[in-house]
Length: 169
Image 1 (tube, rainbow, N blue to C red):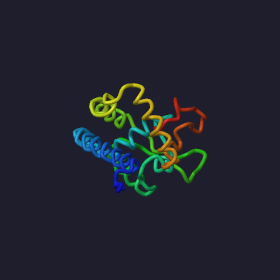
Image 2: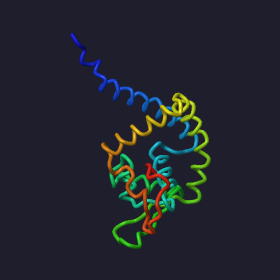
Image 3: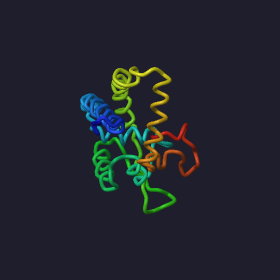
Image 4: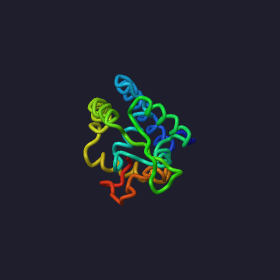
């Protein structure tokens, strides 16, 4: 009799969850050393990788796992800490942008070397370049299917400046 739990679909999702949990634990400890939570790091990184170091609040919510009210709370806290600021959207009075401040970029610059070291040690160095490229392609396809708003606001700005590759910012 076939064991239904040997299904490769269950194995694939199980491995993805295990990898995410293992990396997240390593990231959390390193981020804490720099006074950032995982959510704050995600927000500041997405903003720093976006054109003009900014995203509309609605686009930031679409790119993260946060609701619009959750993004508002995180941005409020990060604004109090001087890491972000808000800027009114000139074309839509109902919208505003979250923008990384110089202090926020400095905190990211201090945090990133250790973060990249963890990524290299525990993730990218485990795969040869071809396997990594294949994995990234597959992850983008799955991400786009399950989270179509993941790149909202990243590919262009009001001025029409395109991002380098349209990847998640």
